[in-house]
Picture 1 (spheres, one colour):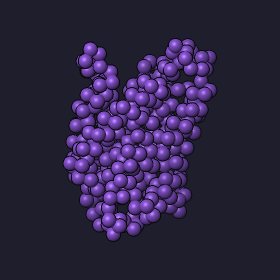
Picture 2: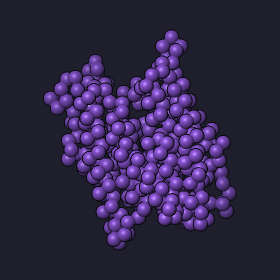
Picture 3: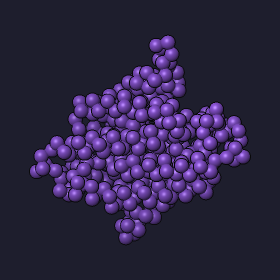
Picture 4: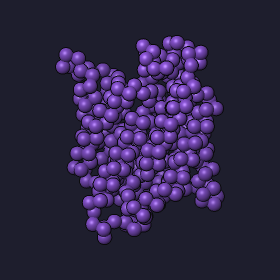
Amino acid sequence: MIYVGFGFLMTFLMKYCYGAVGVNWLLAALVAQWSIITQGLFHMKDMIIPLNKKVILEADIMSATVLITFGALLGRASVNQLLFIAIVEALIGSLNLYLIERVIEGSDVGGSMAIHAYGAFFGIAVSGAWVCCRKKKDQPQDDGGHPLEKPSYMTDVTSMIGSAFLFIYWPSFNAALTRTDSDYQRAVVNTYLSLAACSVATFALSAFLRHGKFEMEHIQNSTLAGGVGVGTVCNMHITPGGAIIIGTGAAFVSVFGFAKLKPFLIRKCGLLDTCGVMHLHGFPGVYSGLVSIIAAAVATEEMYGAAGLKSVFEALEPWSRK
């Protein structure tokens, strides 16, 4: 997902294919090492940072945050600027993750809030700062640009390679940090069903908005929004029907964001979001957080069992929250 999925998903622009794959690789490799330290600072014992497979996995997942931000700035930030952003973002992201997991004690096993929403809105914040610092005459007045800053038939095809990789591996991404076998199975099943429902809804909505034709931007991105939308609740008892409903809702959030909101932000605000990360990761991440409120509110010991409820909602131990 990290090196092939994110990398090839961003190759849709002719001018930035090399940078999309190459810089993606560089940033991911850097953050995978740096995050071992930044996240380890919050889990040290006797001034020693532990290192095992779980720590490496968590560091690799943190690199996804930086790559989401990279998607918002693709083609607009230099390599040196991106390296600086990655170092700062991973440090703040580790603090954010610590606050969610240890202070607030929220349940976010798929990282929709801590990884996807954070990475998207961090990228939008950097993009907004960049817009404010530009001269007015340099700000884009529409979504046009240099011919090489547009997609081609071949680059759209290579971008679909990234979409396919992300679609295939998203269930394992959401389920990677689950604590029990039953949680793992629920996370895989719920994520797969949400992705499948989201894909069908995305094709239908794209054809509806384009008068019977599919928009490649929707197919490359919005088909994956179901994985983000279900991420926070994937290990909860949401039922297969619930997963399908969540995936369908994520498609609505993402497709209408790409179709209606993204052009408005470009033309009226001059806000850059090259890959539309706000509509694939940002808003679906917020949507997942809102869904989790409902899923947590209806959770009972009869539904999960005493051990199951504790594994999903750790803040209930020692039953300090009701």
